Image (cartoon, rainbow, N blue to C red; front, top):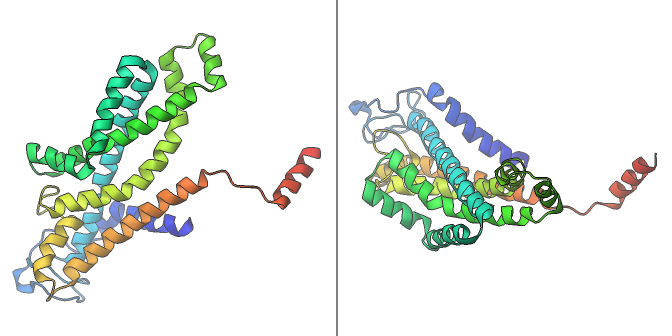
Amino acid sequence: MRGVAVIVGVFALVALLGPELAPHAPDATDLDRVLEGPSAAHLLGTDDLGRDQLSRLLHAARTSLTAVALVLVGALGFGVLVGSVAALRGGFVDELLMRITDVALAVPNLVIALAVLGFMGPGTANMVLALMLAAWPAYARLSRTLIVSIKRRPYIEAVQLMGARRTWTLRRHLVPAALGPVLVYATADAGFIVVSVATLSFLGLGVQPPTPEWGQMLVAGLPFMETSPGLVIFPGMALTLLVIGFNLAGERVALDRVPRRLSKRVLARRRKQALA
C-alpha cells in the first residue's frame, strides 16, 4: 500500500506544484532550438516548436488530473443522486430510472463520449461533460443496489418505525453507508478516466492546443518518433505510471475492505483483553 500511495502522491504533488517548478512557460516557443535533445537548458529536450518538454509535462499533470477529478466528482454525484432517488421512491420511478441506466450501461463509455463531443464540439469543458455523461450510470446502478440492501437492515426499519422521514433517513444513514463501496469503485475507475481523457485529446476532441496534455503531446510527437523519441516516450510513461497507480490503489482499497481471518495469536490476545 505504501508503494501505491507514493505513485499517486507523487503525481498529485506534481499536479499541485509542477507549474510553479517548471523551468519555462509551457507555450514559450524558440524556433532556434527545435527538436533539441536533453541539455542543461532543457532537461528533456524541446518539441517541434522549441517548447520545453519538461515544462509541458509538468503542466500537463495538472490538466489531466484536474479533468479526471472533475469527471469523477460529477459522475459520482449525479450517479448517487439518481440511484438514491430510484431506491427511495421505488415503483415506477425506480423502473424508469434503472431502465435508462441500463440502456446507458449497454453502450461503451467512449462511444457515448464521442457522440456527445460530436454534437457539442471539441474542448476541455465539453470533454469533461461528455465523460461525466458516460460514467454516471455505473455509479447510479451501484448506489441504488447498495441503498436498497441497506434499507432492509433492522436499524433502518427501526428508524422508520420511529417516524423519521425518508429524506432524513436517506441523508443521515443510507447515502453515508453506501458511499464507501462507491468511493472504492471510483478509485478503480480513475485509471480508465485518465486513459479516456488522453484518448479524446489524442483524437483532437479533448484538451485543445496550446494547453499541454499528455494525450495531445503523444499525437504531436508521433511524426518525430524516429528523430526525437522522447516526445512520445515521456508523456507515454507518465500516462502509464498514473494509470498503474490508480489501478493498484483501487485494488488495494477494495482488498482492505474484505474481512480478514484473524490469526490464533490475535484471537488469543483479544481473549485476554476481554477477560482482563
